[in-house]
Picture 1 (cartoon, rainbow, N blue to C red):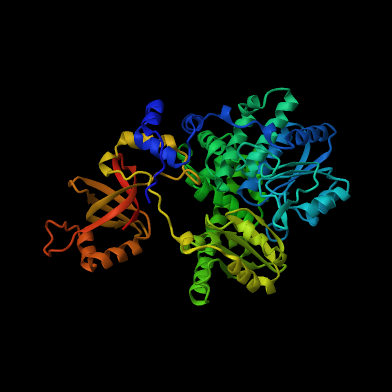
Picture 2 (cartoon, rainbow, N blue to C red; picture 1 turned 120 degrees about the horizontal axis):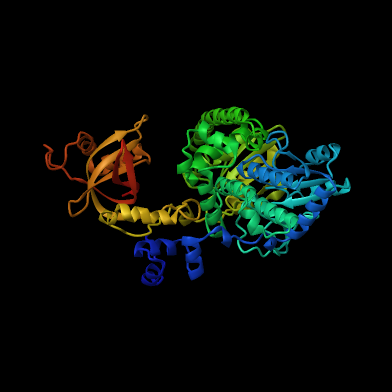
Length: 597
């Protein structure tokens, strides 16, 4: 589908000195108002929203400063994923800077589960904790916070998840926990201008406000200080790792955070880059999402996320190098286990009668419970359906879900919440615990309630501009860089051209899974094109359409002109984006094919 959103592209291009193509792409990202276009192209840290716009922020700051001054024991309770680890580090660093008596606790995925529980509260109380400060959790811990209150402890919640609710006579009654302060932009009466921030950004805003009030200065001054810039890196890291939309202030946070990471102030983060072979000067959202971030998640999945937190806290280079190496090794192990789990899930779906379900619920008792979310994501990608993967846990069954755009996972789970011992999440992802005897009922209820139509399952490929490859140039690619960083909410632009003739090709890569081609447009101009997708499916498609001989001719470098056998040339319409290929000092243009037909 070609995006057909309208605007005065000429006026936008002229005002911001950009091409008409770039003006169209920006409009396709639903950036419409003049101030928003300017922020998208030229936004700076000065345009981040003030911390005090978050409900209860002032209250939280005052309590924490008072507790720090009285040397009361503050315990930060975080979470075991990227966002939780980064949030915990941000708050720990900020409170330490205030001279507070502070320590941290990150729940163990298997023994504690997500978020607060009575055991963690009791443990904090027994350790002499006066104040519990949550991050990336707490909004759903109504009963646990009531328990902490009964023990005489002070609780402050910082979170970004949906506020739980009961639906009574069609009306939602929200259940905000009875903490001394609740800082969560998803609260109905919060009014924060952009509530789609991650837990680490909420924590970052709290630290900016905390240090500003302590030093009697403006939060923007703190933001530009050494500690403010270091913590911005972690806010950016978590924003990408938690797959938040890269719009509005998230875009500014990530753009600035990635630039700062090139010369990171954190010894642990630098060690992690070295352990994974990451070039600090070329960090992109992809690097965080698929190289560095999974190393943090892996430790929380297969061991304890305390190691990842220690990596960021340590000032010892040797210790940092050792921890980073351990995290990298653990992630390599996690990859192998994930592949096995995905294969088991596919067999169950294909052979176990689940293929017709609109919502997939796959029970893999023997799979490590910490891998459920990753496997659910892979299955969702393969079948294009909302997917829950359940595993056997110490007490009953635990699982994680990953959704598609048309299925609000948290709302749909709320319709059968009596089946769960615990659940939470948001539109596109969720977690749950339930008794084993409820697994089939859970599957049945989700599918009975499901209102998804066939159209909801169709993969829609949105083309920004139907643009001839001849338009692509080094200057144009440089202009596209102004749209970075790409990610959720700001995808890499996609262009399309019809009638592209495949002249010759070869298969590259250690696993022979990359196709490299010379192609020609209707005017005979030739281009280099590369395909990183499913090469097997591509070969099947071409063989079905043009015959098996077409592949032989293509890969034996026989062009249609010099082929002995007269045959129909391979001509496809393609969706692509232009890129720069650098190889052994040579720089050339290449088109990256995303889709074909």
